[in-house]
Length: 212
Image 1 (cartoon, rainbow, N blue to C red):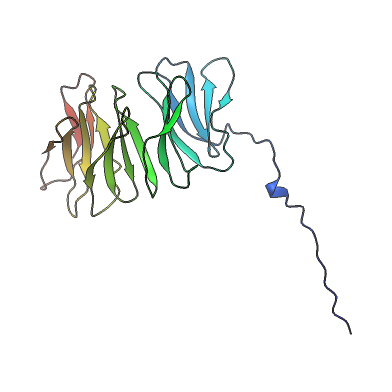
Image 2 (cartoon, one colour):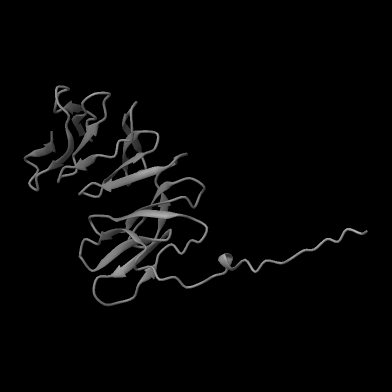
């Protein structure tokens, strides 16, 4: 008897390039300040889609990366998005001229971000339970707080971009905290006798609303 060895080639159909319909795959959108275009994330790419008529652009076209959480700058000068194209999820900024630069240097996983209304800062959180504010012009990052309990994903900017309100996770009742970006001062708005969350400013910035 003699042993026979066979090698059967696989067509590997799942690795072939193919057209995909992305309308039902969009998982995040951001409307441009002038309302003319939508920044959308689908299947790991970032797209600029016209609100009415025009051309849809694949802004990243990155089959080797997972792009997510795209957000227009409120002043209309470009956009920021999260991608792992350098090996880790980091925030990148693309200005109105199309010039791109990385704003963070994180080894981990960024979970969310939010521009300040004046476009000077980006608040962001990640899976190591930190809440941060990032100065867009310089790339300077400030760790606002680190939680010992869970992810810090509940935060909101004041209309003038000077304050960040957020929920501080506790072992018992959560607290609402107000952070002054310029001075770094923190003011605890609520107390531990009751659970508070979801802080949000009124449109004129005169009131801070929250659930409790």
